[in-house]
Image (cartoon, rainbow, N blue to C red; front, side, top):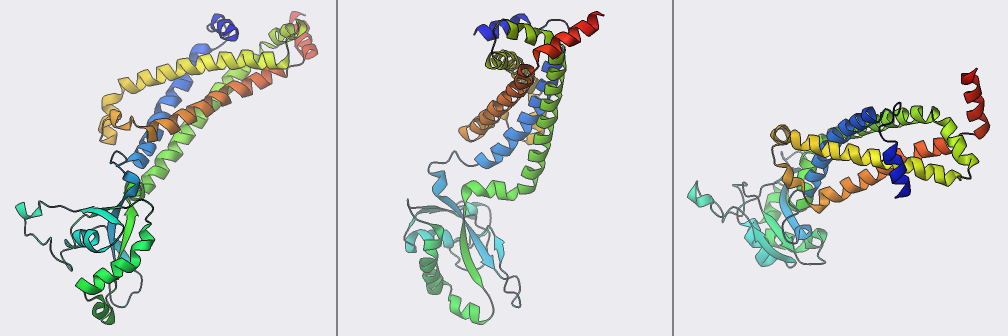
Length: 308
């Protein structure tokens, strides 16, 4: 607290460029946090479901032509597959698909083959892996689809299980890469700009460092002093960044096509807090390390040269 009080008294002293440092860092934090929050939001998609880690989307794997052995994946299956998995495959606790389709179009929900338009999700029992279901799924296919005859004719048809929590990240993986790269570049540039401005002010404060050392200050004391100052500025920049986010809220929501409140979950907040902690340590330790290493003799020699 003592170091924070000293930092607060020096906050807007002439030559410290405090306002410039706060504005620069706040702008970078604003856009960097928005982009990173969107990335983590993709990874948190559908996590609100109970037992979301045990939910799997049933994908259909088939060869697009009889001459190809490479299977194509499709996230829709025939209507009877979902209920069939629940009834005949041990380890499948529950299954669901679009039950109201008969109200809108022809109802093929009992088809075992064809009409592959049903988005099907299953919940597996605890401790059950998707790979362990393969024999029972094959037995179900042999019973209802006569799969052996289909394979003899060159048609390959299998079913795989994709974790529900990975569906959205896999769908927008290119977007995740682009947003992550832009966010990291923005944060890196803003942090580097902040540290360069801070170090430039510390060079002018070489005499202050020397005086502190002459009165018995250890290197750790000087590091703590600058760390407290940087932490205070980082906190003010973070407050300003959140203010800008609230100001830009309608524009941001229009671009990401969802409300910002949808990002308020632990899968988004936890990594954001971790990143902010790393940035706070980075912007606090490096300038403090430079300030603490300034030699006393060099500081006073520079002061005498300026005096003459």
